[in-house]
Length: 463
Image 1 (cartoon, rainbow, N blue to C red):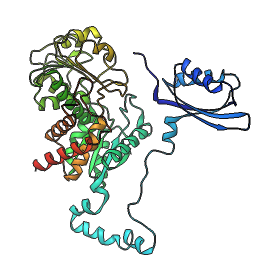
Image 2: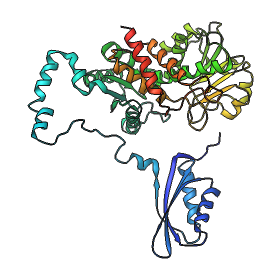
Image 3: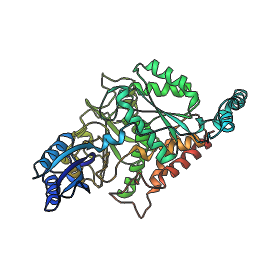
Image 4: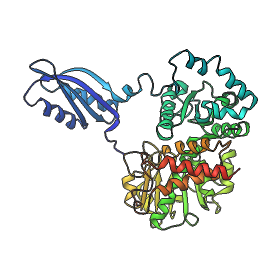
């Protein structure tokens, strides 16, 4: 699938040209001929006969960016001074910071915020440990924990390389839910060490967001931490994805006039996200599901089933289908992919039932080309921002944690996740709903509030 220029590879080229003439139009023409998109031009004088110009443009990737710089250098009279990658500039020095909420302007204020006044607060918490939520940052804080073993689509790149992603996650928590989140990147991929480290860090936090930990270890890490801790533990790669997928599917069912309990679902991907999506779909009432991994359909007759795959085999695929993904898709109403790029074609989608729904969520390259899928499917969603119906976890996790923290919940349940999915789906009104709008924008003002309220209500009802 051909890529298009993206702001993720945006560059700003500072250069000088002679004043007057056709210099500016030649610069924009050079960028466009090289396949880039000019997004800004800033001009300042560099003497009475020269102009300094900052040309900002979107490119496809780093190699394409260099091609555009080379093209600009070929313009008559151009002198290139500096090329800046705007994404790297945004990350210089990190994207988050800690700020004090109280003034420290004089000795009196210092004596209350710190010693000796703070000792009274510490003693109050020692007498009544529940006061820690009322009197400290714990009430509004989340640890974003990773071991760097499965970062985005980049694989096992380690804790240092994971830090920019965890910073970004923390920034999203603050932007969309007002939550103070802290990136915790651990230099171990030993399950016991991960669990123990998070356990001993937990007193400072109101919740734990596990992030980018590879399967199948992530299942055990989450399960053990939920048993050990009295604060909610949420693996966003699993449950955030599951919430948004279910929400989008609920609305897709409204579009095509089908019921989740009646449709036949083919899934590609049995890892962390796929398993969580599967379990939440089943909790919401889906009954007829076949899950495929790289070896084909997961069924009880396979001899390679680990604990997670065994559960899938025993709880899905009731007809015992043992073929490949293409066969599973044939005659299905819904395809959900959380796996690998390019594993299906438009012709495969054409074999699905009338009014089919395709969620091809591998990112950046989906399981099937969205344009080809749209020729045959009634509704198509991807994980990409340059297509309609983006399945994006940021629609879920800020509101989920806001609700959990406000309810002072000690756990996360499937009922809470289901409540979040329903609330997210309801943000899209009947008037707005359509094949190209089954999930709201991540910047929709009602998203985090609606999800938080639903989770808080479910958490309170479950006590």
